[in-house]
Length: 218
Image (cartoon, rainbow, N blue to C red):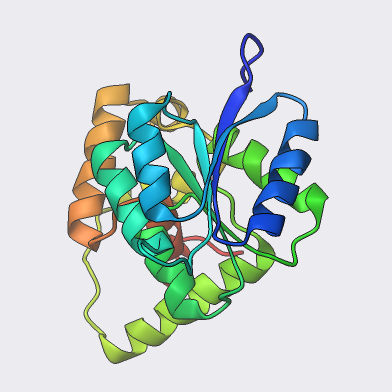
């Protein structure tokens, strides 16, 4: 967690009352401040170009003009350093999986308690991901169903399997390299190679693959 300056958060939600309530709540969290509010994805995009880029975007998935999926895709392409926390009424597997695949770092339902909301923000800043028990179950269930339809599985060597086991911990990639007695550059090479081999785009994707295929037990 940063100690010098507050983490700047932007909110994009077309429901005004909810958006303003969230802004007030976030401003009570130690270490966080609201940079701006946006009514939808297009409004968010304009304000990011006009204002300082936020550290985190709390993003509604179902919005007019530019929804959460397209907004996350745009952020990942143009501002990949911005971390997206999806906050939605949509609880289906497809929506959750799609948001993570597009680059979201976390996904919460709108009935989430304030304590978990703060926990999610902290986890995304410190660990680059937040997976609630509910969302983890949805992700694994959805990808297991896809695996049932597509039996093809990548062949991994032992070093790659070891790397995947460490990915499912709280360690950074640099710390994983130290545990494997390889350089940070080599650890990064493992990550990129597995992204390509497993057709995933994030640490969440690697972790889900490891759990789904029995490389790591939970």
